[in-house]
Length: 439
Image (cartoon, rainbow, N blue to C red; front, side, top):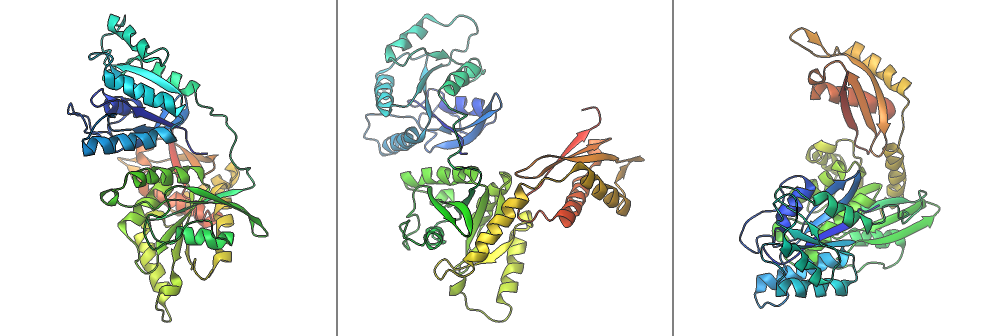
């Protein structure tokens, strides 16, 4: 399920980016005293009380301005507001309620979204200043006093936001459906592939990169199985992202990955592998999704006897960080190997949710440690007492050891490879967690 979105909005220089950084727990937004430093929306995951949301930092809103950059920032913020589940309006205790604050409050009320009023820069602990009560005039309910620098009041702020979010909302589709995100850079044929799978013209298909602005769902329920294909806008390099609508498309693509069970990473066979492909694949890998690397437009490639083997060898090198992902050469135009794609989606999905018993895992551990002795350091040898599987999607294994520092990355990789050799786990990343005795 995609994470709920909380948009942080307000006029320039009220401390939105400082608050954003405090809520996500690290410095991501640029913080300056100069108004207008955050020009684009920045987004990151925020966790509170074991629940996750997507936080979106916006540029300052100037409702009435002729300045080109400020008006673009206003449009950016409007897109974030339209997509948010909850909006935090940040104001400044030091300047009090301004005419701009009142204009923004009216603009937000028209959106019909839940609004949480944050009065920032209340840095002194204890009783709030008398000026605080002035913010009731905005008509947005009880304001919350916050110090984004020190972190006072941020818990109360998130508590109030979470009251408006239904975390128990049902999944959009039942578990029978495999949710597949088709991801890749612009113009690799994502919409053409979904149209071919659906057997109808669902998406606008054009040679102009960036035709698809949003994530759209196509349900396939036939003899091949039950699938939901999520066609996403292409993710392109930030330096190339210049249209206001398209900037938000990138966030939608990342959120489509969050919603999915399987990611089909589409590569252009003619253009070949690019740096952007590795970033897209890297995000899917980090999220623990089952992955397939599909090389599209294979019909347009001139071939000789060993073209496919040579191309696959090069891709194995390019995608060395996710060596588990299978390759498939397809054509969305002709429908070449699309039946094989369905089989592969079902297979990697099964691998991603595979559960292995502790007994079998420890049989593999005994064999692996007898074959290659665990490493030693200053006469102290690593002992792995046992391994157990903690969760699926992706398969996550916990190793209990005598000393965590001795469990080097290379030996962890060796144990992971032994597990893969025995149980397959093709098309899915594996998480390895180490626990020291006594933890």
